[in-house]
Amino acid sequence: MTSTLPAVARGEGSPTLEAFRVTQNLVKTAVPGVADIAVVEVSDSVLCEHTALSGVCEGIGFRRAAFRGVRDPGCAYRIGEACPVPSGTPYRRSLRDLRPRIVSPIPAQARWLARDPVRAAVMRENGVHSLMVVPLTVNRVVLGLVAFYRRKGSSPFRQADLRAAARLARQAAQILNAVRRDVQEQGMGRRFQQALLERPPRLTAIEEVSGHVPENGTPGGWFDVIRLPSARVGLVAGFCGGQGITAATAMSQQKARIRALAVQSLDPSEVLTRGLEPPANEPDAQAPLSPTGHCVYAVYDPVTRRCTAAHTNQARLTVVDADGAQSVGASAQEPDSSATCNVTEFDVPPGSLLALSSPSPQDQRHTVPGAQAQSDRTDPEIGPPHRTATSVVTLTARTRATAPTDIATWDLSNEPSAVTDARAQAAAQLTSWGLPDLSFTVTLVVSELVTNAIRYSTGPIQLRLIRDHVLICEVADTSRAAPHAGEPAPSEHGGRGLSIVNHLTQGYGTRYTPSGKIVWTELSLYES
Image 1 (cartoon, rainbow, N blue to C red):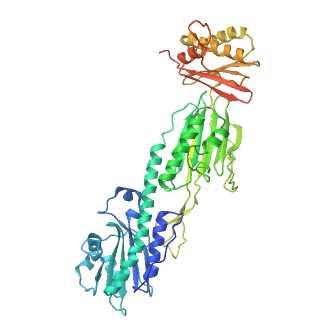
Image 2 (cartoon, rainbow, N blue to C red):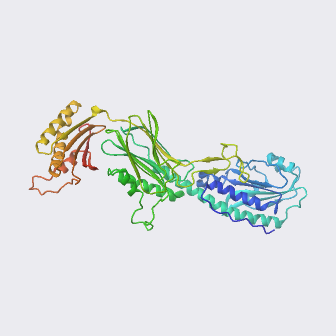
């Protein structure tokens, strides 16, 4: 016999599906050239990520992957069904010593038949008189088992048949081993992915936060909840292309870049445009890291009750309020391969649900043999009814609005006398809030920020205090020049304003608006 297993193309689909295709090719080649019936059981180390990562060979399970026979023989197990390999049988002995063997003739009263009644009954029904068992192994790693049978009317197996069967098994084992490595890599990537997905922080702007990445998708999916200045929150969901560790690494880099840009209070469109670009020092920086990836980033402000969102490709944002759902961004029926960000801004009623979703760049529907049937369709080549799975990252959060009583806003004139007014109004508001102990610190911070706004801008100035889990102080002006702390000489009287602000507060920064900028600070509600 000189049968050769046809080459199998490595597809972009599920590794599990690839394993079933390989074994189906094996039995197609073997029947009827080598045997009347050919059956393949595949190890869980090929099909299961947990088993593949454990590296344990003893005690692993097997699953029926392929079956083919002449004259419509019966089948002991359905495709995709778990099938035991009892001890004391030729099948188990071949798995232990990793040697192929012929059992011919098969005595009707053989003890091992009693140990394996399911297979024995089908063998008797089909008049099987000769058996070959060949383990599928690479470097002594068990990947599966092939059983060849000859029925009444066919000659018994000989050594030439065993050599032909072993050649087929070796070729199939090499491909299955590559599939097992893919499964291992996917598993490692998924563990890396899970380690990087942090529990969303508790913020006053949102509640009922829930993130989900597909269990069986590629490890490139991710989500993040980012605390932003002025009680705002950034929500992001994305999906990078690739497989295994490559996808997980790309995901971690993309997540880190977008978070780093988001905390600088950049516009969502700029965050995505810069965050999805590869670092300039990468060797392959000419092409985007994930040209087929998807991402949506939204910033919700509980004070203004507005949301600004940017999205690429098929990522989308859905807002569910009392009037129903409203989609923001591309829909599944509107393919868009453009890398340009689409931006939208809208009001968000309190209690609305923001739902961000980002689909996998890979084919989003994978056939999974052996899974619980979701329909009555049967694939004659692969096996029993099968289900389809969609890989989508989702992040949902219900919005909360800052109470009007926790917000105080004053419009100030651009003249030195405004500093005194601002200090007095801030002190009165703190007393109204029951925070008089903060008056000295807050009025000093307000004085410095308003003075800077008067000195470096020419238009109107606005002061706003927000009582959140911290006390937020904001001063808005029409200048886009960012303030910076100076280093005055000991003999100089000025230039220390921002240094004082930095010392008195838990944080301060600048964010830009269409009309200028906002300098913000955060102070603890309780004096240390």
